Length: 251
Ligand SMILES: [Zn+2]
Image (cartoon, rainbow, N blue to C red; front, side):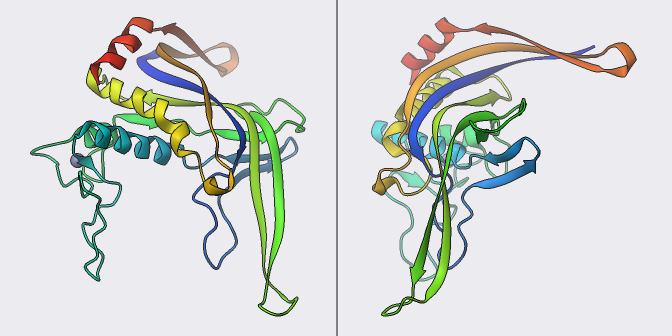
């Protein structure tokens, strides 16, 4: 038998409507909703953009507190010399290793792995049949629209924008122990995510999030080889309410 003990944060959210990813890519077919399985049980999609959303919420919390952290951009200026960095941020990983900031300690960069891991959120239509193991059921909708050539009715581009609505849970696994301050920073960032919204078309009313539940757990996961070689995996979980409350105070 093998086992591993670790902590994770489970966040249950609800969205009235969201379009994942960064919105339409100019001049191409939109690719904001990643189809990862198209089987008998229906189409499964990956919800993109959650890590980026939490990362931006972190940057917001740091700025609010006047703490300088890594920006998501690793450049200070564009090739034309225009400033890319708002005040209060340094280019990503600029702080490492001498004055490593809290953002870099948590999220890492090409120089150092992240302390936290975002589990993929896989969704499937509520109408899908079968067990759809590992997928969360939501409402899916596709908006088809066409871009017309100016002054004519000739179509120059077709869009098939995918939206989803409903409740889903995202999980952040802690690869190593976080300090109270780091955990607090992460929790406060999660609490702030509804102010930013998920994915594209936010200014058109999409991407609204309602946070419903945030749980910090200690997990012991074991895996063993059972009868006829069948692998049996089990998880024991325990909620850490005090640690969660202490962390909220620490940032
Ligand atoms: Zn930094």
